[in-house]
Length: 122
Image 1 (tube, helix red, strand yellow):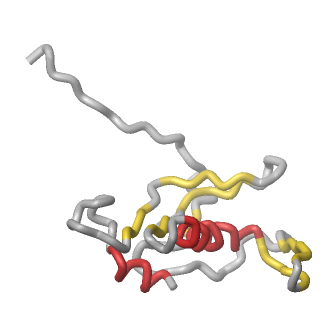
Image 2: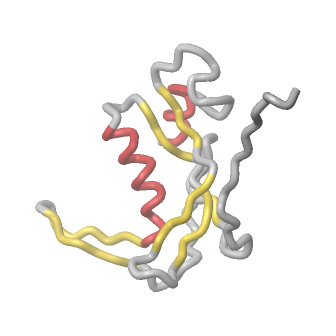
């Protein structure tokens, strides 16, 4: 029928040679360092904190859990860390969301593992 409409999803083509999976929706959390020399630090009320740029995706997943009142966790973070930009930029694609109060299997798609997925991450 000529009146039917379709939809397509288009994503930016990421450099496959720099593509990294920082964590998954099944509990994997990357600990390897791909970008040596990216250690950073900051001082807080309880002392100094040291981290690598590659720790940021894990911190982001943890932040989404805390900021949502422990109801959601954004994970399955994968993509490219563009070190040529200042400051460096994460270009992420295809994340998953776990919802702790999952009412049906499709709340956030088939990758939503609910409370079990959140527990696997932590």
